Image: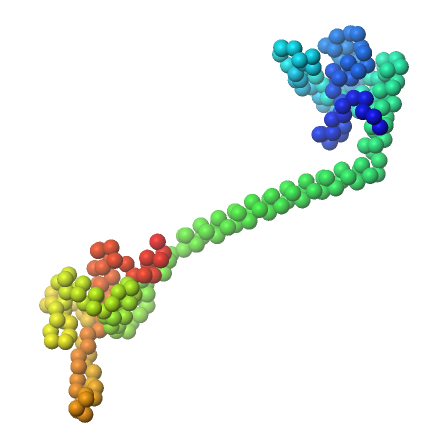
Length: 253
């Protein structure tokens, strides 16, 4: 079918421009006078036609002009009202447009298009919902209190060696002993580190004596200093004040 006039298929039903139809029918009366007369035949705005502003078709400068989207049924009736050969030819053309629009294949195609739009909309909603759930999950995780080194210490009631504590910070026992010595916390007495008097009475450490068999075959004893839960908390606060944090807390930042 040859196109006599442009059909707009962008809405839920095909339409044609009122001005283009006016020109195609070779109506002598000006469009601004002709169209209101056509509406007197009972056509209703919002049902049979809609108004919009269009640029001038002649390319001349000026303000946009009022045009109308006409349903194919309204355009068909207007053609019949003209009682001209041109009007009859365009009416037949619009009848063909209607037949094609209402054909089973066209109806099925529109149904598929509608289904695809619905599917795309649902997929978009699903994506947005997934994003929302991900954000909410992150917010929940952020609100949950993280297990801190402080909590770990409180959960542990056992005595612990300096080397084990140093390992929590990614340090060695040598580094830890030197740090505590420089901070005025401990001093070395022979082969053992002891706390200065101001800290020794606070229950930070517990010294135990271990027996071992020496190379001479004799049994010997050697004292070892261990940190209590209270002592570990003291070390934690001391080192934290210097910006030194346990590895597990550094990984949370």
